[in-house]
Image (cartoon, rainbow, N blue to C red; front, top):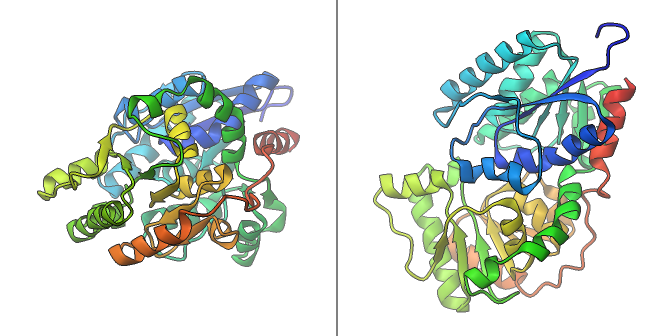
Length: 364
C-alpha cells in the first residue's frame, strides 16, 4: 500500500450465499466510508439466482461483472482466475476478501495470492472431510492461500491451527450469516407475501432444496432424493415446498426424471422471500450448507440430505441431523426433527461478525 493512501479493498462474490454472507462486510465498509469495490463473477448466470439479491439486500451494484456463467469446474475456475487477475492488475488493491467455498473463492484467492495481494477468507476453517465434494477442495486451498482467516467458530479456528496455519493469521469472528439474518428478518416479515401467494400456513409445511453435485448430477441419486420427498409427503401428509434450483431442473430434464406430483415446485426466490418461507417452516430438508446455518439461527429443525457436513456445530446443538439420501432414513429423521421447538443455543455468533472483520483488516 502506498504511504498516505487509504487501504483499498476488493470484495469478490459469485453466488447467492456469498452475496448474503458478505453483505454485512459491504454494509460496514459503506458505513465507514472505506475505499472498496465489488467484483461479481456471475458464477450463476440467472438473475433470479443472485442478481435479485443485490436489490433485496439493498447493496451497491458491483463495479465489475465478469459474466463467467456455469460450466465444468476446470473451465469455470480458469475463467474466474483469468478475469479476476485482469481486474486486480488494473486496480490498485491492498486486500482481497472472498467468502465460502465456491469456484469463485478458489479463483479469487489464487489470483490475488499470485499477485502478492493479501487475501482474507471469510468463513475459513470449515471441513466436511469428504474430498469427493469440490467445495471441500476449494475451501482447503483458499485457506492455505490466505493471509487473514476469519473462522466462524472456535472449532473452525482449531481446525486451521491443526493444519499448521500460523495462529496470528486466524481470527474467530462468528459467522456473517447471523448478521445478515438479524438485519433482514424483520424486513422480510414486514414485506413477505410468499405464504399468502402459495397458500401456506405457518409451521404447516416443509421447505426442501437440492443443488449439490453429489446429489443432483447423478441421476440415480437425484431419483432417490425425489422419491424421499414423495415418501415424506405421503407419510406425513404435509405440503413440501420445493424452490427448484436451475441446476437441478436441468438435470431432471436431461435424465428424463419427474418430480412427484404431490411436491409443490416453485421458482427460485429472492433472499427476503426465502427467509420468510424458511422462518415459518416446520422443518427444512436440504443439502445446502448455508441453509443448515440459517435454519439453526432461525430455530427451524433441519434434515440434511448428505452424509457429512462442514457445519458440525448445528448437529451438536440438536438443530440438524445428517440423513444421507435413503428415503426411509430421511423419513425417520424428518419425523424425529419436525416436533422440535428450536430452543437450542445458536453456536454461530452474535451478529457482529461484519464489524469484527472490518476492524481487523483496517487495523493491520
